[in-house]
Amino acid sequence: MGTLTAETLAERLVTFRRHLHANPELSHEEFETTETIRGWLLDAGIRIANYPLKTGLIAEVGGLRGGPIIAIRADIDALPIQEETDLPFASRVPGKMHACGHDFHTATALGAALLLKKQEQELEGTVRFLFQPAEEKAKGASQVIASGALEGVRAIFGLHNKPNLPVGTIGIKAGPIMAAADGFIVEVEGRGTHAAVPEAGLDPIVASAHIITALQSIVSRNVSALDSAVISVTRLNSGTAWNVIAEKAVFDGTLRTFDEKVRGKVRERFEQVVTGVASALGTKATVEWLEGPPPVVNDPKWAEQATRTAESLGLTIVDPALSPAGEDFSFYLQRTPGIFFFLGTSGPQEWHHPAFDVDERALPIGASFFAALAVDALAHLTGQSLK
Image 1 (cartoon, one colour):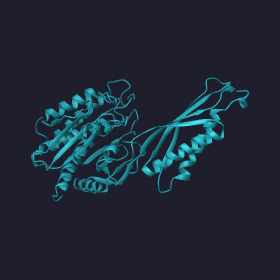
Image 2 (cartoon, rainbow, N blue to C red):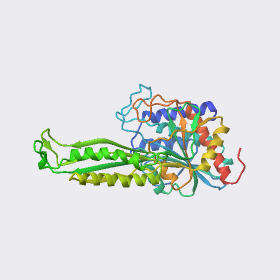
Image 3 (tube, rainbow, N blue to C red):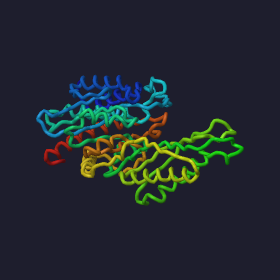
Image 4 (cartoon, rainbow, N blue to C red):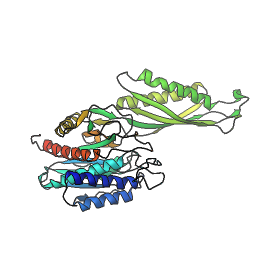
């Protein structure tokens, strides 16, 4: 691919990112994205590892002299959102858009692979790149783990662009950084009747209203002020006509927590409130949980190492606010210690907005940080002195 100068690296990463941005594919549909990434890696002489993934792929750099394995992960899927940016490289696919910056993440990881390929002979181990599908469905990480791609990995690193942080800024935090993201569906069964004679039935809408109100007391009266949780009911459906009391009501929403003990306690109280209030009003209610990813919890040791690496590159380091969004990178961190960090991209809009965009000056910054962190991690794992 020619000489890799700072200028040519930046140009290539912009090209990678814009191509991906213009050609988004949804979770589990990333076939063309996978083949495009494969082609770029092969053009750079980077070997593709053989793991059974339908979409997504695994690549490796280093390992010529043995040594430990560390992993860098980038998610590759897009969202079902109609783009509203007017960019010259805007999505060519109606109703699909890289509105969370996974095109940015992928290009950044590709840049790190190119940088590490230049110094492959000197690497004290293997850097395994996980180009992961289906993050938006919170299914891709589990698929990568099931493929065996995490076996032997001693540490894993991942990033997420952060629109509200300026370019040149990196957010590093030990412990929780992103939330567990669970969904729920509550079904309330009553007894239908004419709306003019409510005493002849059991109104599931009134019961749902009482349940939803009671749910708001769970966080305020069961979660310590030193912890946090969010319960949001986002949809309520019932009834077919203005003069009919329905047989059933269904409402759903999400629960966000940053600690597994809090997560378990809130879910337990949630079910008690739902069934108890429904019973008190003569109705019956059931709860179905839509299991989301657990909280993203960073390893303190690797947070310290990431901070040292960022300092060596002259980045501005901040202690980022916790994000209530979910991330299936958490599944990796349940098995392998590592760090998930935020990289400033000076974006005009937040994640999942139809006008979402990133400042592409952040691309080589992310690639350089990933590459430097990989080198430092391998040095640490092999007992070498670090810069």
